[in-house]
Length: 386
Image 1: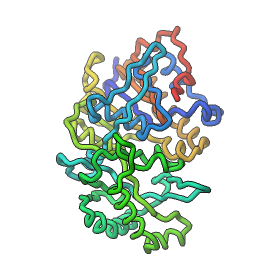
Image 2: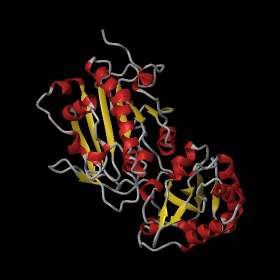
Image 3: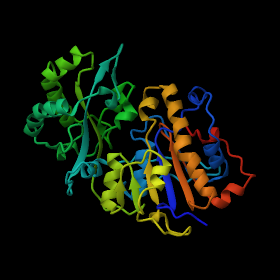
Image 4: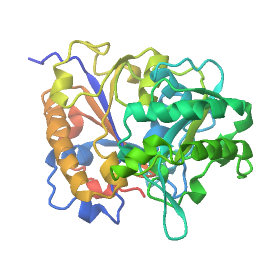
């Protein structure tokens, strides 16, 4: 007899789950992942997007923007060709939904997300470090914001900080300014990733003035002096990204489980049931009935549950392949193995999963009947699309 689970159709979104082809042998060394391997081999291949080296957004950001209809109507992935691969747009104007998730009210204004960052001096260029590695306490972030806010507002820019670590700016002066996701630019020469006018490629004097004012105010600030005394990098700049305006979105999923601000904001705007990402598949399966409970195997995509899992970002950006490897083993044990078992037992009607790399992504979908298609022999390595 089939077990009743609160999730009938499940889609997993996993950022940075695909290493580059060059790093794959190191990242996957010694790993065994029979459940994911079987799912990859037997599943139906859906959208496969080949990224480009200088895209300013990340594939999982573009995926959620497209899924919920947050990107401009013309910003869609190019359909796959004969080899199953297509190219990607670069649209992920997610700041207003991030603001919504953080407790703000975007209204109809255009917003950009601003994060305090550290930019270090290399031999002949500047390099952005992963903001998550700053270890910036909320109290310190709030103290830095208290200094920066009046300087920003004096320049005629509206600023809100519903959380200490993420701020939001709105100004007609920024026009069509395009920024790069912090994790896209981290570890790289920032020259090509700095904000520029989307249509002309020119730098924005308005933004550079805001940035310079903040940088000068934070130079030798007590927070930074204390950080440097503890051996931590100074918070010496701000990073502009995800600019966009709120638009109507669609209810792509009935339930969303994610810790990412953009995904949570999209779920709120779409009226989806929202919760934190569970630690394991079993924790999800043991949760009380959700809006997708009781749906049939032929139910529509927007009756499914989306779970965004992010165990890889820090290790991937820092090229800590040992840490990435350990996270992959845990993902196999806690998610793919039990999800495969549920699919085999008929407890789960459909399992979809989107695996992302640094610039590209692959989506696959498996139903119980697919698992019997032994002639399908797709290898995990074939998913490396970059």
